[in-house]
Image (tube, rainbow, N blue to C red; front, side):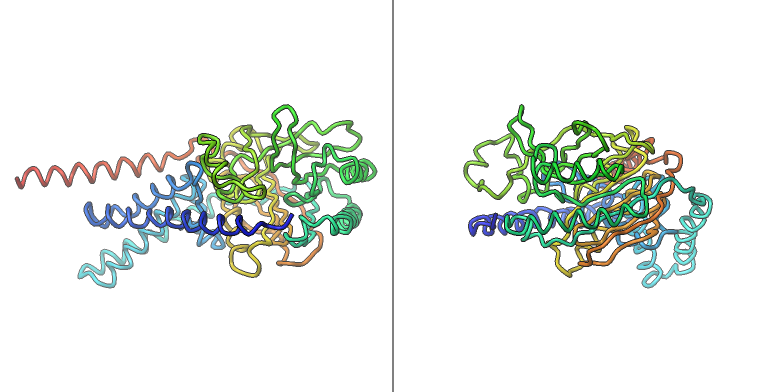
Length: 421
């Protein structure tokens, strides 16, 4: 269905409001550091990033630590304290560099800067271990235009191409086939046309298949952006996941569940119509367990950690990044997802409709990947997960440290003020 003109206007307003909200964080950081000292910046920055992940307006796209995801040996401490530890480290490095350039105590700050870099570089070889092969995966990248997905006239060709790629992928005998977000276009569990054809194909190939799909929950009268595991020769689809964190203003009007009037005032038929899931689904398949992250859910550290804490040994990301075009958004989105492997010590496979699809090991190393806007199949071996990381076990302990440090700075500032008065 084409996007309505009013929806384009409302989406633009929503994006402006969202960016304005996110921009407030930098102002608050600057204000706090001005009053309580520049050395509080690493702690304040990390705490602000943590807060940015919360609520219906949560949108942690710009987490500072993710800017160095490709530098694998520098990001391994994320296994200890999550992405927030890496962000705080980056701010600290910049503070030390600033003082090295402009302070008279250059020797001391130079030594501190060397120590700051030495810490992650020393931890990395201790932490990283050789990978052990687990299973073979075939990731399908159909490269369908997001605009064509809503075009009924294009659906037959889209599905024919998808099934052709699937048969080709099956030739290498993978253990698992992965489709991208909403690859089936309609509810694959209920459709008597496309759904039946895909389920029959899975039966004939005998290969378990994960796909993103719209899902209609009849008892709840609700539609979800979801994912399912199709098992060969199974009468019904028993394992499914409903997306928990919806994109604000695009998939969900923020606070419309709490304030239904919002949906009536600004809702349109093609804006914010998805319902939110609430279950942290862990899929069980022949080789173990996994959980799905749909689209930008992969940028949320706490959401991902909850899946692994509940037993997921693998992360499967299904997404559709065609909306970014050739801009940097697709590359950023992929790197944000890769950081989740470091934090939790589990591998990740990512199927992106238009790219970038990839296979990553439990240390954030990209083993294989596709290019943007190229249809094809990515085949490879997925390594086994490693032992649960401290971050996976203990969560955001580093944020508690940050909060305690900020409180200590505030108390110190107030104590000095009281002594002077």
